[in-house]
Image 1: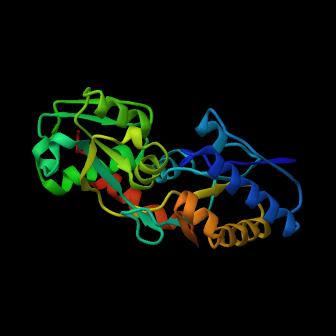
Image 2: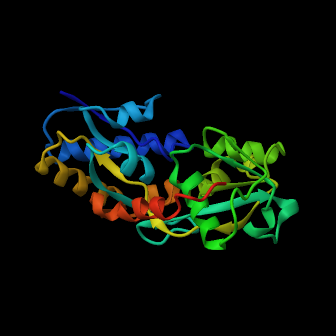
Length: 258
């Protein structure tokens, strides 16, 4: 079988993602992992994550608990981006510079943009922050879907929305590699910490291969190259149980409407 490897979630600087994928593929060869492997950039992420020939990919915590019951969790990278704490990350609440100094409560009856309804960082984390405010909902005047964090930032710059929740690693990578797209935008808050984006593999992956994947990812996380280019500075093995907190928060915030 030809196995697929992908790193789609933080692919904001393709040369850095390419280097990570190449390193992991070479290391798996050195570890004598059976089978052939290739790096892919899937167009349909949900279909990609559900494939039987998925050796390794990265997904979001909410799709993991809501849409991907059949995959196995390999672990999660640690990131050195501001807002991260070891295996945990959060979202940054971003607005235009003219709103610097304001907090989430100041955006009542204004316009929010979210990347997707199945996004933990761009939608559900923000619902959690509103629940903590204890305010009535719907809170915002309007909510639009952008399709990606990058498009949400564009909506802020173009003044078609006023606030967005952006994955803190994505925000840091955008600021580094695409500063023109974060220019004129500022952080006005942050959401609660959440388990980092899970690295996953097919349900068909054997326990021996799962162990080898964890060994390779742990080794990759110790490479200074990836700390410099992708903010990766550690790796933790994980299981589905580590993401139960996302399921619990979904139930707690079921009545929160943006």
